[in-house]
Image 1 (cartoon, rainbow, N blue to C red):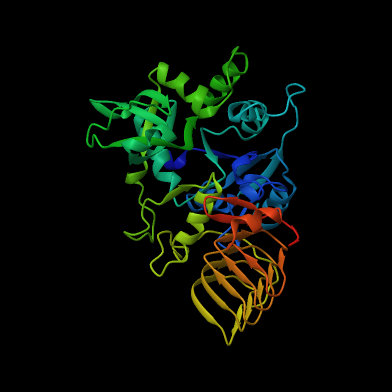
Image 2 (image 1 turned 180 degrees about the vertical axis):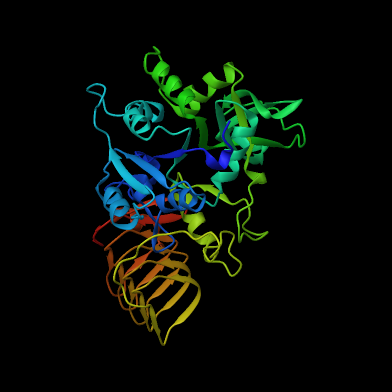
Length: 408
């Protein structure tokens, strides 16, 4: 058997997610295309982890409202073709029938031509909408050592949170082997080395290529299958005793600190998305964007440097092109092209590209999508009833304005 480092690896990024719980941010874009941290898109974290890990033959499977996602991938993720490196966006094509993707496993089944063309030894399958750092080369090595067809990445979570995750039950005498894959269990069993914790699936997998092809092909004909990687494919490997777990705690990412080591956030709700944004702005960030040993790559366009004039700012993430002129901004993320006018106050908010805050306006605990204009003297996030009356979403203490949404 070839040494793990010499195996040929193809990475598949599942990026067709609709992200209904992130509405209105996903009204005009796929969930992986949602902006994050000022200059990034959510997909940049998965792609950066892959290329930093040496996985540089990557296909991105897209489906739902994918234009901005396809454009971002094609314009940002260009690598030298000299060594065959690429990141290619692949839309749903109805190659095997008249259906669009019926689930994550079906997305891979309908795209098996990509595996056939590349002929890899290993296929890494990852989601496109989590915020984290991970060295997949270490997981690939662990998979090869385990000698199984499938390895699932998992993160330790408190046992009381088990009903929020797909939970991996391990063999007591071999904690690397998966005994059962449980979907949001009500009465979970803790880990052998820590009864107060469970292993939650991260939605990242490593497969032997031939085993993956066989599994998704068989699943395509299964009556009643939801054609889901976590719900159908992994349990099939478990039943054959061919599934191992990779504990995210064992992953050593260069440049990580004790504070941000092991960070992983599923930003599936507006609140979790907002909280993850604020994780990056604190003085000692829980997730450190300034790790130059494991950079998160993106492109932010031809914006000039940020500028602050006669203003009060504290714990703010500034992007290129931001101008704060005589305003007050705290605990906030300001994306490229944001303008904050004199006398305006912004607190605990995420402002996306080209948002304009008028003179004397107040914005608190809000997410304002691209091109939103808040008029002079207006207030957002202070009165939930007034925000709802204007058509904004009010949820979990947050006020959210969709892309181009007017302040009426």
